[in-house]
Length: 66
Image 1 (cartoon, rainbow, N blue to C red):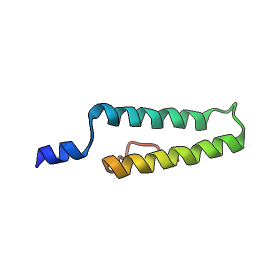
Image 2 (tube, rainbow, N blue to C red):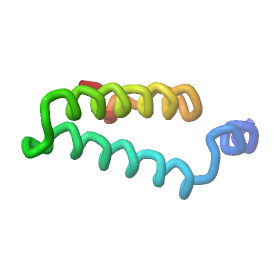
Image 3 (cartoon, one colour):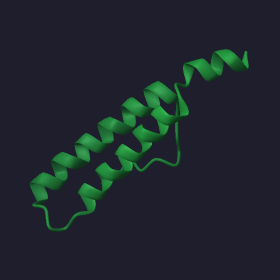
Image 4 (spheres, rainbow, N blue to C red):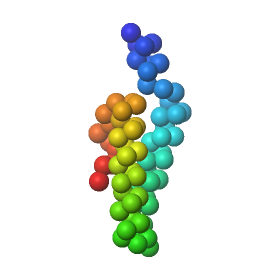
């Protein structure tokens, strides 16, 4: 059973890279030098990335959503 769960969760490297990309995305939202419309667009992109991450790897309460 553990092998099946491990196989479904993807490689740790892949998951770590996806999480790092999400963290980097949220940095763009927090960049006050960007225009408000740009930051809103980036926020939507980050939220979509979180949804895709959780669809693939399961819920992750530690990920930023807003």
